[in-house]
Image 1: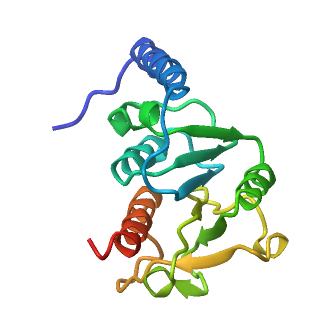
Image 2: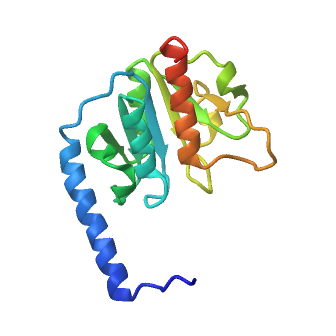
Image 3: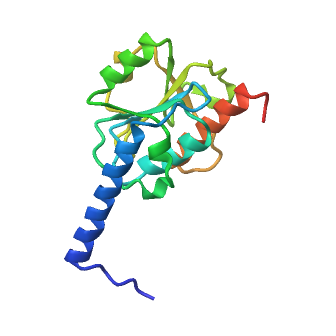
Amino acid sequence: MLRQRKSKRERRESRDQALLRYTKQRQRNLLATPGPHPFIVVLDHMKAGFNVAKIFRSAEVFGAHEVHLINIGPFDPAPGKGGFKKVPARFFESFAESHHELTSRGYQVFMLRADGECSLTATKLPEKSAFVLGHEEWGHSFEPEEYPDIRGISIPQFGVIESLNVAVAASVTMYEYIRQHNGGI
């Protein structure tokens, strides 16, 4: 059965409803309290309408301290099932601003890459870990050489597909962090 395409008016109404949800939940986000685990997820120039809300959902489930959004506009929070209003969000214009904030607070920053030099499961993640996830198509907004303190990590894969969906990769990474810091749950 073919799905009927929405009319221009229906698409506009849907977009307006999503923006209203975003505005309401962003206001509620001001009251969000950090999760019980000190790790931070950094979303670097990701597509607003694709994975951002889903990553907030996982961040809430795994008890993330906060999520940094770098140059990400409004998104529909509905797929996040309330995660956006529960996990503190910090908004930055550039990765440099987020990186400065993280390092000044004593965080070790890790960049998820399909070709990362270290395996996620073989890396001892410090308590204060921050995980940077890049744009779904273009990757990170910065050159790794600009930040020699950032360690590249990858998730072990056994198939022929180059990489996981970024929301799935974020969830796997958060799970591994929790596994390492909660006695092998």
